[in-house]
Image 1 (cartoon, rainbow, N blue to C red):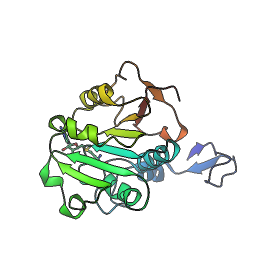
Image 2 (image 1 turned 135 degrees about the vertical axis):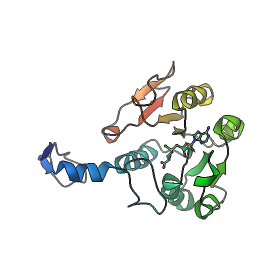
Image 3 (image 1 turned 60 degrees about the vertical axis):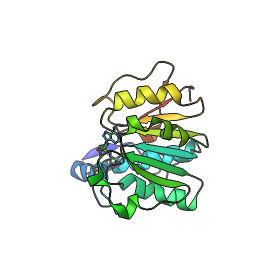
Image 4 (image 1 turned 90 degrees about the vertical axis):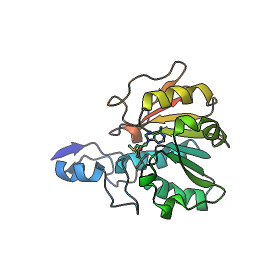
Length: 196
Ligand SMILES: C[S@@+](CC[C@H](N)C(=O)[O-])C[C@H]1O[C@@H](n2cnc3c(N)ncnc32)[C@H](O)[C@@H]1O
C-alpha cells in the first residue's frame, strides 16, 4: 500500500488524513485507457484532470492541441467548447487516426484539422485568440513545437508540454515552469512568461 498525504480542503474527503491506495489500482487509475472518453486518449486520467484544472484556474479561453491523435482529449474539451466559453482547436498529421465522428464535428468554437502542424503555424496563431490561450504541444517533436510556440505566444498565454523529461528537456528562454499541485504525478510541464 502507498501512503498518500490527504489534502485538507480538497474534495477527496480525506480531511487531511493519510489515505492508502493499492499501487496496482493507482497504476490503473493514472494510466491511459478508453474508460472515460468515447475516443482513445494517450494521456493519463491525472493529466486530463490537470488540463481541466489549469483551464479553470487560468480562465483559458482558447486551447490548441498540437497532436490530437484519435481525439480523446478533444472529445472531453468538446463539452467546454459547446457549453462554455472555451474555444478549442487541434491538428493531427495522420489521417488514419481522424475518425470523422469527432473530426467532422465543426462549430465556431470547435475545429480539428488534419495536417502537419509545422506547415500550419499561421493557422495555429489565429487559433490563440481570445486570450488567455494555452497551446498543448503533444506532437512528434515536442521540443521543436515548444520552441516555435515560444516565439509567438503573448504574455498572458501558456505553453503546455507533454512528456517533460522523457522526450524534451529545455524550457524556452524567457519562460518559467508553473508549479501546481494538480500537475504533480503527470509528465505535463506548464510554462508562462510570468512568474505564477
Ligand atoms: C502522443 S499522440 C497525441 C495524443 C493526444 N494529445 C491525446 O491526448 O490523446 C501524438 C500525435 O501527434 C501526431 N503528430 C506528430 N507530428 C505531428 C505534426 N507535425 N503535426 C500534427 N500532428 C503530429 C502523431 O501522429 C500522433 O497522433
